[in-house]
Image (tube, rainbow over all chains, first blue to last red):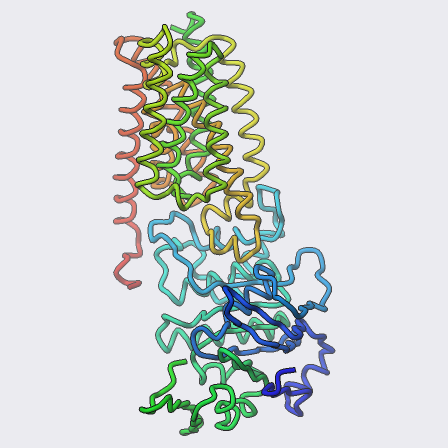
Amino acid sequence: MNPLAVISPAPASPRAERATETATAAALIAQHIDVHLGGRSILNDVSFHVDSGEFLGILGPNGAGKTTLFRVLLQLIKPQSGSIAFPRPVEAGHTAIGYVPQARQIDPELPLHAWDFVALGLPHAIRPWLNRRDRASVQAALDLAGAAQLARKSIGRLSGGEKQRVFLAQALVRNPHLLLLDEPTSNLDPGAQEEMAAVIDRVRRERNIAVLLISHDVNLVNRYADRILYLTPRHYAVGTVDEVMQTSVLQRLYGSSVDVLRVEGKLLVTISSDPVPAICRH
Amino acid sequence: MLHYAFMQHAFLAGTLVAIMSGAIGVFVIARNLSFIAHTFSHIGFSGAAFSVLAGWNPIGGLLLFSIASAFAIGGFGVKLFRREVTISVVLSLFLGLGLLFLSMSAKKATAMTALLFGSVVGISRDNVIEIVCLSAAVLVVFAFFYKPLKFDSFDPAGAQAARLPVRLLSIGFLLLLAVAVSEAILIVGALLVFTLLTAPAAAARHMTHSVARMMLWSAAFGVLGVWGGLVLSYYTNAPVSFYITALETLFYFAALSWGRLRERRSPEPAASRA
């Protein structure tokens, strides 16, 4: 076990009560994940779990292995050691994981309506036509992602925030138990970021989907996430925002002098990577 | 006109190949494979030239060479072959090889023109049967893979995120394309495969926003071009392939203008969403 891991077994928070009320099981249990790529250690003995309907924010500097962690969860990369379990049984018409990748180039000339773009993600494997149930689930996914009014617009002509909502709808149409979102709010203006985060928060509450969200925005994560997983190149910490976003914890993670400031309820992290102190870009 | 057996064969074969190429073409454009299709046609040309030399049925050599290259391109990865330099090198090599094979055979001149520019009116009854079987096989396989192929072609990042077997789909599509190109060569020739594989599909993109309807439009443009080409050529004696090319170009620019016009009239100007 990583000595620096800050494990929160069962914090006495309103969220914990809600979890017991709805009798939610763990959606994901990752244990002792080790990943080396090209001779470099990317993830080092990472263990955490996520409950159904829980929102886990993933923070950390670039190169800390956040996207690699997602690729491990998607089984696109096999970890050198460790285990991943998805304890919730996958019923027909559901999938274990929905993933919204970070980089997605959409040709502005792509002649496809948002509705059809979402329908691409439908989970049936071969049948070339859509039945009534498929249509209903596409509509439900668009409604849930707050993209219903975009259905008949060309996907290539949507704004960044609108595109993200359509991408989210495409992942939701597969009825996932677990949603992996890789920086869905980057490249969005603050208003659109807030809107996107609110949509994601509503999705996990309404569908009881566990959400793992990678972001560089501490305060956005602070507002919506139940817990956070903070990754740095060698260490990690997992716990509630209050538990992890502390000067002592981040100092251990970064191995250098870090200050966590709280200004009017907002978090500000500064790292004194010698010699000049700078605002941490994360 | 239609009482001649050769015209019946030409209409039947041309229609089938146009429908199949039109449907496949929509995916060729979506997957950015236009120039790989063109490379296939040159590889196919050298295969057909080899058949002429060896005394085989041309479709045998066409399929052998293009299917082998589909596996090679799939194996190396499509990315490498999308590069202009790779395409120009491979394309020239196989055009040169085709020239070599034909120069070694006795029927050099006629075969050369037929393979490079098509010989739809020279299609025999046996050729028609081959084309019917091949087109049917391609369309059946295509229908079977339609759903995942559509996802991977129009949203590759999403398809990968949904854990579709993207590599398998890529190679599978290259194989379908290899067969489609081989057939198109028999109709319009190696140098003009774009005419049936990309021009109708490019026009169709401006007509509709649904993939299924795009395929219908594309097939319709292809068929109309082939029919128009055959009729015009019959009455004027100019080459069929020229007319097909001219008609498809006309369709493309007409569709482009129609798309622009419709966009300008649409109630929602692009500027308001910026």
